Image (cartoon, rainbow, N blue to C red):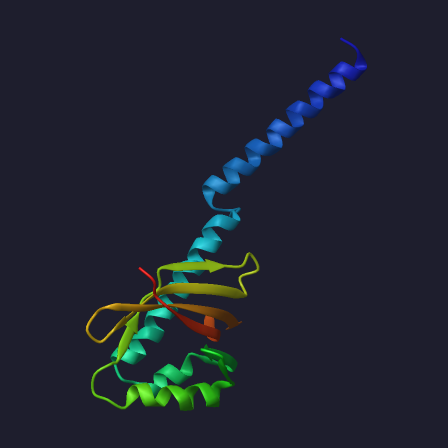
Length: 159
């Protein structure tokens, strides 16, 4: 065997060894892949979205407001309400009656690889339980584990 052939074989063996070490470390949990982190963050955001929706069911406007980023933008038709105060003031009207006028639930959540932004979408039901629209919310992780909504928009549901 030539020196060139031995070097190629040696390189292949070194790579196999490196791959084996990485596989062992990943299996032991010492090295994590991006997928579990992404899945964990998606579960976290889905939980935050459910807690946000629960504020409507619980009729708790102050709790609703706590999920809003200071720079939140909520779109309704062609109108954009900008800032936490404007959004909270507009939504206060949805909290005046004893029963919630609608409810929502996350169906799909995805988080950027950076872990800073997430999107949540899902159905919106009226008080009678009929699906009327689909919401889309963008969440920003403002502090570790603290997600606040920065954009929100509902769209009419088409069967």
